[in-house]
Length: 191
Ligand SMILES: Nc1nc2c(ncn2[C@@H]2O[C@H](COP(=O)(O)OP(=O)(O)OP(=O)(O)O)[C@@H](O)[C@H]2O)c(=O)[nH]1
Image 1: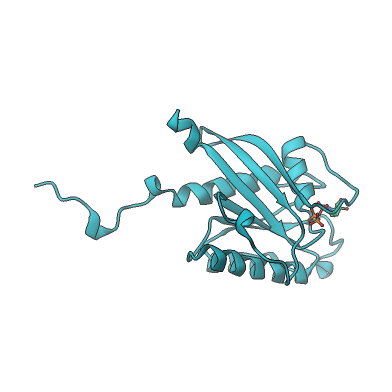
Image 2 (image 1 turned 30 degrees about the horizontal axis):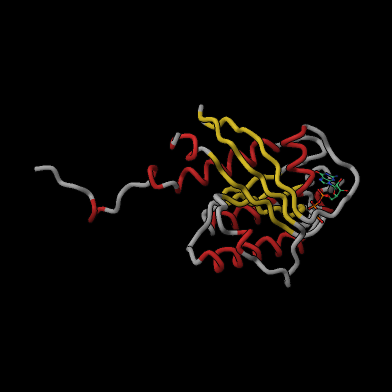
């Protein structure tokens, strides 16, 4: 049925190495925390997400950690509906990397903005506020500047994990054509 096809969503999770992308996805899909570190090549997980009463069949693509030399290619763009860009609140470099990745995706896709959630992971890690390298308002300001949502999470303590994917669906649905107001010039005037 055409209605079923519309409810399939693909979400790509990107960020620097070891920021907690796999842990976030595994906590969400499989309900447990992975303490060990296994660098990811690429894995796709499937999960049904009920958002605002609608069931979405989501493919969540957990990608390999990126650095400034990594290249965005078609698998990061074609068929992807929304992005989860992850940094660690204990690593300023990983936050800078999120901004680089965002610019690369926008430039690869040739659009002005993309449906995206900026995620500050590992909030349980800085044992004192002085060990935190990315203050929440800084990330919020960046997210607002690009029209994205932002949230902080701990996969270890299962804080805000489900919220990440709800926000991502919300960003995707906000931009879906049927939720857009037609531009004023194309509005029909019934006489
Ligand atoms: N304290 C704490 N550690 C975490 C959290 N999330 C992930 N980690 C740890 O950070 C390490 C890296 O986590 P991964 O989820 O493998 O990171 P990744 O971003 O998928 O790494 P790549 O595959 O290299 O890109 C692991 O040892 C995790 O246990 C968290 O919320 N809190």
